[in-house]
Length: 68
Ligand SMILES: Nc1ncnc2c1ncn2[C@@H]1O[C@H](COP(=O)(O)OP(=O)(O)OP(=O)(O)O)[C@@H](O)[C@H]1O
Ligand SMILES: [Mg+2]
Figure 1 (tube, helix red, strand yellow):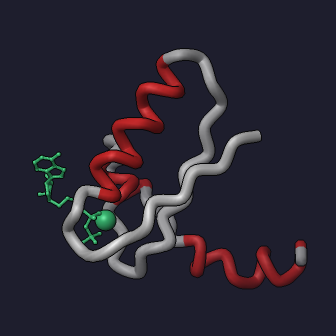
Figure 2 (cartoon, rainbow, N blue to C red; figure 1 turned 60 degrees about the horizontal axis):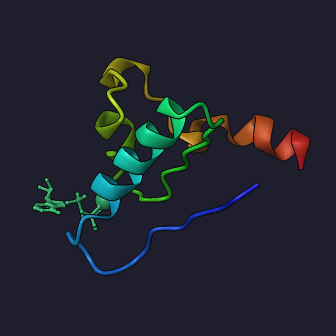
Figure 3 (cartoon, helix red, strand yellow; figure 1 turned 30 degrees about the vertical axis):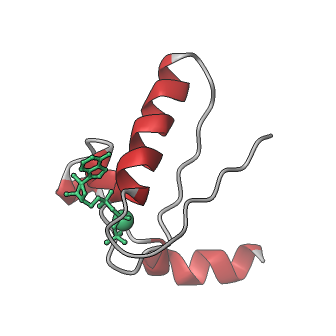
């Protein structure tokens, strides 16, 4: 499994590059897991996920606690 982390100062294109790379890898048949750690998240929207379907991981706090 390869892991790629995008970090850096604000507005330099992290989300744009992450979403584009994820789409290209998935298009090539790779299994891709994308995690947005930005409290002001917009990566899912960059991937084309409708706003109504976006569920912040923090909403699953109880389930996460049970599994850790
Ligand atoms: N290579 C590029 N050329 C021109 N504009 C770009 C490029 N990459 C990103 N942008 C634009 O720059 C802006 C910021 O990009 P993006 O949101 O991807 O940055 P970010 O690093 O994720 O920002 P933040 O730190 O706020 O999360 C967006 O409007 C995006 O469309
Ligand atoms: Mg961003």
